[in-house]
Amino acid sequence: MDEETLRSRAELWRRRAAQTLDSRERAASAELADQYEALLVHLLESRDRRARAD
Image (cartoon, rainbow, N blue to C red; front, side):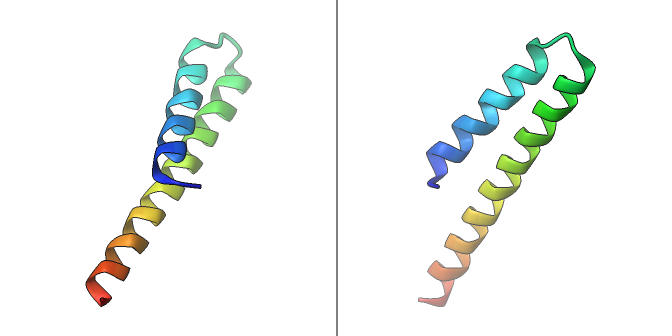
């Protein structure tokens, strides 16, 4: 996935977490947002490492 897709999915799950009334669904949505954000950080760090290596 690219940076834009990861950002938009993290935002989507953050919005879902904020909007839902069910605490389990809120926690699951927040966890998904966290995971997409972690993937984004990994992507950006990998890109930065590759740029410095070149």
